[in-house]
Image 1 (cartoon, rainbow, N blue to C red):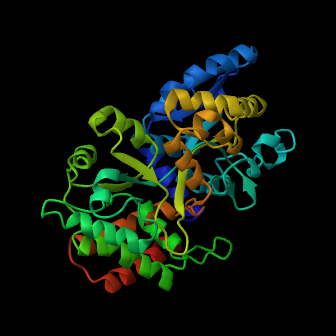
Image 2: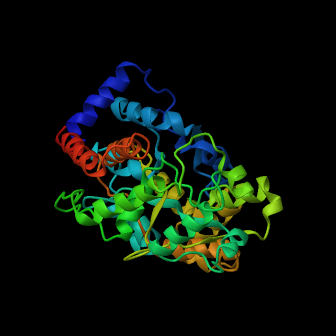
Length: 407
């Protein structure tokens, strides 16, 4: 999406939305922070301590539901009445940076050395930057691992989790052969990042400097064929409405890909499975690369409280504060140094996430990437569910991407 397209979208949203009231630029005494979902509700607990240490700064956190956040941010850009500090999902950074909504933090790196990219996992560091600017500081991170039933894998001959594409296919085949109602690997068909994880593992990459997406490369095509093979061969199901916790518990879906949030969900909702499941770094081909996501904190471009906003982000991203946030929210620290703490280092499952975070990629910092990912999901549904030819559908997909990039 070019800047003109985003401006048109912003105007469209603004014409159907009320201008935001009570935002950071209008309140001379309070630093306003927009945070999303449950994080926004919990963040107030951290701000109390920040205010105690910084009595001259009052912080007001507004929790915004994720399903409303994107439109609200668009309206803020159009009205120029945004918060001082805003949380962004990593895939949104490039879109709002491209629209000029995010303050360039590069001039502040000397004063705040903890903001330097080398303090973060390389995948997270990629999400901080747009063109030659630092526009966001990673707050927390997530990545995808392989969740698997240790007992069921042992029954089909795997005392260790599959480590390669070939082993993953073989294990999934043996697990699905237990009966018609069983599958080998669950793949969330709405998850835009999984096809790209396979592509990265196969040597695919986007050249952000030249704008070459390389979606016609053999590496990308082979990865999509591999992704499709799980559905083609009945190792994964296209049927919707099957609860992953229940099907994991029942052994119907004994392997799946997911993030750190699933640890507590399984512990809470399937306590009887204790000792019968674990996590592993992803099986790989050329590499075992996984994705990196999470959230960043940015400063709205016309904030009148830049100094206070910098102090707030610096405090939130201190190692001790990140570890406190881990305890409050069960989200993973973005600072590499935090992973030396025993609470992470001595927990086998969390330590595995730390191991995988050493080999991750973030979504390319291209404003159109969200739209491209959705088009790929649409194409894969036509392939996996509708029986469309892979080569023909990918050709149509590339044409649609060309149109998206030319808008």
